[in-house]
Amino acid sequence: MKPDLFTSPDYFHLNELLTEEHRLIRDTSREWVKKEVSPIIEEACQKAKFPDQILKGLAEIGAFGPYIPAEYGGAGLDQVSYGLIMQELERGDSGIRSTASVQSSLVMYPIYKYGNEEQRKRFLPRLASGELIGCFGLTEADHGSNPGGMTTNFKDCGDYFLLNGAKLWISNSPFADIAIVWAKNEEGRIKGLIVERGMDGFTTPETHGKWSLRASATGELVFDNVKVPKQNLLPNKDGLGAPLGCLDSARYGIAWGAIGAAMDCYDTALRYSKERHQFGKPIGSFQLQQKKLAEMITEITKAQFLTWRLGVLKNEDRASTAQISMCKRNNVDMALKIARESRQILGGMGITGDYPIMRHMMNLESVVTYEGTHDIHLLITGLDITGLNAFK
Image (cartoon, rainbow, N blue to C red; front, top):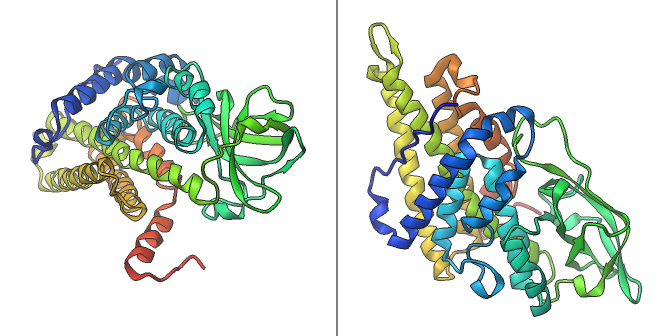
């Protein structure tokens, strides 16, 4: 196992805009990734196995619900801190960041924002500590970019709700203890339910054969006449805006995370370009390689400032859905391009597990699609700037 020699690029001294607390949180997360993720991630990816031994460590560094108030077990951190943690986790692997993103933004966030006090106290501390792991059920086989068309439904049966349907492409589902499930009631209104493992009729078959996010567990959620207690209904928000509000938080974390993947690819390519010799000199001395590297650091720097500003706006509760959407789309697209160019610099070595680039590239092919595809996010920006809806 090669030592993790990652050095974070900071071409415009963004570090100076971070507080001392931000830097401490980022550096703690970075060191944890170097110690606990880097040594095991390539083997986990090759074997397509989620390294569940990291769950305790993720909880210990505050990666589960970092912005959830301390009274509910969270760290009570701000949104920039959350973003920096996601950046460092995805520098390690997109699948590891996905696990933390889902736990934080798609499970803990809706319980905190849309749940009642009993639900918050019952679930949030155990989710923050990693005692419980959650997942988020919105996407269906026939309803991805159009989640409002979902067919998963529940009926009021007096003492309980009867839930039927299925969800697909669900991170964490094979080992999740609870699922935040979005389904339509008898009036067709979308509501959130907390479904717990062990409820009769609830199964979570795993998805196999992935070429992407191989170190992340993905599966389905299947509901066959599942009796969900009425106290498990999230009471404080409904309609499609409820799950989309969760996706805003998750997309924000992805925007930061993609920078981490891009930085890892760039740092690997930069180091390799100085060490690899052809025609009697380092390949980094050739113009075409310098062009690639110069464009990489430029795009990373632009993304860093775009995302930092978004974090400031989120701290002020002024970040719009459209701004978050733009940032997610831009940063993932940027990271994908950098992964591909970095692979070119490494030549044949770039496809091996000796270097992280091909793994990042494959992972980012999922990240560019989930929680809003690249094209859907373009249309969100288009709607925001023109006022004209291209979705209908």
